[in-house]
Image (cartoon, rainbow, N blue to C red; front, side):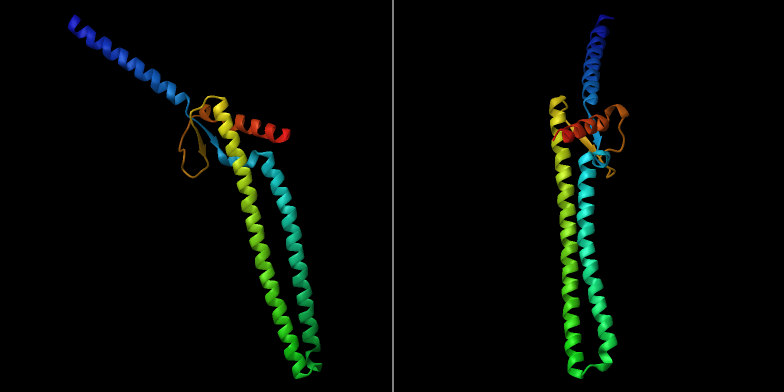
Length: 177
């Protein structure tokens, strides 16, 4: 009987120590929902509003240039019958050049809008990442996972979700700046 008691006691001790460390490490596995942070972060909203205003101005400028070009084209079409062959050729060349310049300008504006959108998004993401890193250090988390619908985290208990606390702190930090 004593030969059996010692191995059982050792197994019980090993099982309890293993379960303690297993449970201890599971409680430190936490995550944040990156999409919720992006959507709920006040700086994201402020940056998007400023970006939308700037984009609206740039697009209005392009629309104005397109309208002017279309007006010139209509005027040319009305006057074309009374023009000499040389005048028609010159006006067509002028209109074609203006159209090409307008197309180039539209492409440049579109590229500028895309670049500024990427820059704005990256700035906000960097801000969030920096805050989450500091939050993890300050609260003693060895790792904070990011969930965002891309399959990083398929399931986690609600108790492991730090999104709300991080978002509150992130917005408080932004409001303080």
